[in-house]
Length: 166
Image 1: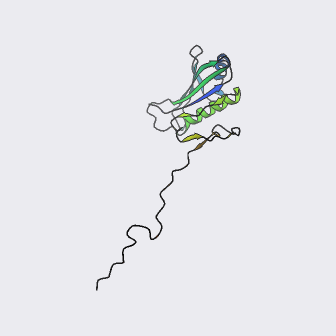
Image 2: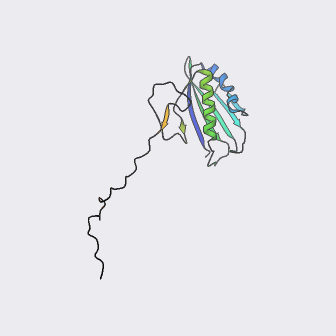
Image 3: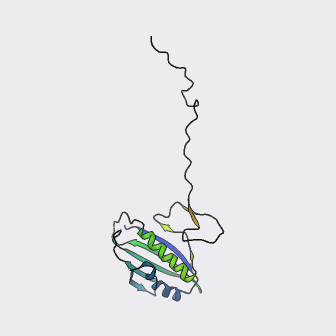
């Protein structure tokens, strides 16, 4: 099973306009080419070429109409080579680029990320406007570590010193 990363964006456009914008997403990915498109199914797949850090990725956008003027776009980046154990952040980077581009170009709203690497994030509850893709999320606080006992409180400290043999 190849590594993957997913992000969902709510786009305030009808499905047909959202689909047209999704066909332009290749601009955000650099050398990516449209591999497959199906407007009736609401899917667009881009092929990201091989690089020094990966064997390439497939970025798929799935559109689902949520109302007359709202479309949900699910962006998924998956390693092209099955059995890939490490993607060195390529799938995350692809999804972040596409999600940021779509949000900027359409005025869309990002939902919390899912997939490998999304664990350990939680909403901050801040009301300030986001300053970047991950602004509304922060890492969980570290676990409290056990503190060493204070001097003289360890078990065995109350024993008298051993008498030296004469």
